[in-house]
Image 1 (cartoon, rainbow, N blue to C red):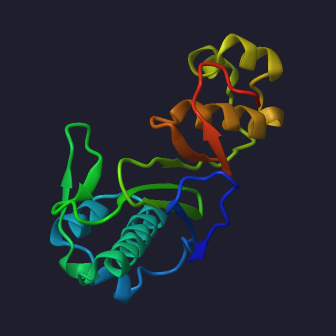
Image 2: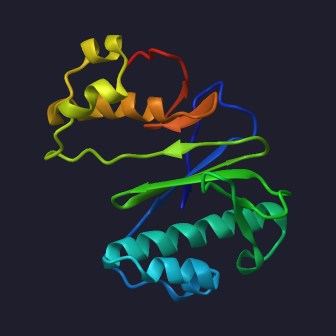
Length: 184
């Protein structure tokens, strides 16, 4: 796991961690032991081995990071969810956190208070993005890029910026401010 260097101006205390996942490897026993029974059952319902590895490894990494900040053993942490399903620590004494994964990479964001969001999307050459362009990008953003696979990095940056639900969020390895129209 690697702590990412954030851009100048990032909020005080914000941390973003990158986890590289070996999706062909078996689930690590040390990760398996950290999950709650409910987390393990959710992971086991996934259809593909890669999805199970991704879910277990990412949740175990999150538990380790939160444990280091709360002093509670990783396997003893208890999570709750808000009305929208976003998880939080039950006792609310720890940092805000958010997780995203795509392909063989996971990102974990931690913030000392309030809320934090993180998102990562893998560019897929076969993706047909044009039909989604009007739903995701503002008119000026649509003019700046054509939503095709060859423009995937620009389109994804617009998509990630749109997903920012709080004033600051991690997007495509850039800290971005939310606004109606964002430069790509």
